[in-house]
Image (cartoon, rainbow, N blue to C red):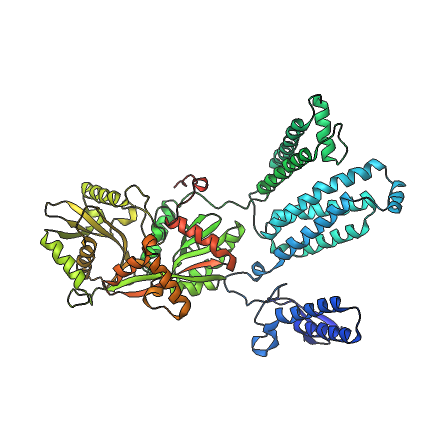
Length: 639
């Protein structure tokens, strides 16, 4: 029987001493006891003792789940605080290795850089001169500088989990290990660099972001092109900094000497040296960006076959009121292997934004979400979801996403809706006024309308938008002419002269007798109350058809206005009221509240605490709620 034994486990390696399981908090307590003993003895001083004590506290804190029997073996091992495993996300994709690797590699690169620009120890140099020429020593010094700087740049992409960055970092560290020995017999730096490379290789599974395939043939022209670009940029800066008497040969030699850390044939001022160094650094950064770009996500929109499968799943499993909106023509799809479940998504600013809940069989959704997580991670994308229900929120949380309440969906019970009674008198007055003015409503399926009627509806929409682009991503359709919308109902208002002046467009919800409002449009020069008239009349039309639930507009942060909980929500609700002049959040809530709906909360899901801002901006761009700078606009994808 060995004293120390190891056992592999899905949550991390188990360590046994004399067949007794050892936890990190055991080690932490031992370290704290050692710190106390050292403090009692007074050696080696308060600074080191404090550092040892902090290490012990960290080991106990990161393993706090294992302190109690009920929490034991409920988390997986990681360098940071241990976390509970997530069903839809591999444990190795939640570790801290990239962050620690990036910091460690950057520190190693800085140590090697400082070593390269400082003089050798004389006795070590004498030993090396017996086995190698002085020019080799100088060349190793010169080459270690750009290689160290390149390693610093690579560390950032290690933090982003780029697999190619791992490969490049290992190559650079291997080169630096050799340079450290050759340039000055710097064994300490060589051992440190080699040890860091070994640890990086041991943690290679944590670097899973893929890249575009690069066959050897492409490297034959890409690498020389990158080197030529860096050299050309440097030659240009050196030529501008060189004296007028310098020849072309002098400029080329000066550029080569700059790279080899040698004295050039003419002197540079400090500003000229800074400009030359900046040009090289910028070229290196651009080259790193091109080299470490992740695998590009598909830009071509789904074809007819995939759209037909998605439409079939929505008709069979689309019980959520937002399911139909996934059939917009501008959404991409991800299916599980059997195509029994899918999500609709778009990519914006490096964020994969999912539209609402997944649609499909429960078993298919359970298979799909891990694939979605892996897809986003392989392509270096952040994952988020917009307009998620309570049920969808529970699913996405199992994939490691956090939730943010963003508002409520107003759903009217058509069987209970009535214009009778004092509370709804304002809506009743609007309906009576419009009827008295000769307005009436008609309802029909979009596909049954004549082309001139559809054209008139589009004219009304264009008048309402007044040149602004159509908004929406997760809670609206992209066009009245979407092929899947032929069976969707339209309620339109006709004035006394027979002209269409406003309309509502609904989409069906399958598995329940419900519809969702997609568009609410009117001409600007119409009587006040036309929308109230359209909604009240539309509910009556839909009730006749057997529809029991009518989902109206989404009211952002409605709960904070309607029923705030606690002082924080009351303050936020007050701020929303004050900001209604610009954002119209409270007005939209008040409009929906006129019809006495029940409210269903919706959430925005995002990764990591610090990822909310980036994911939120991407979602606002997709919904059209935030103007997108022109520099970020991309050409439309093809179908």
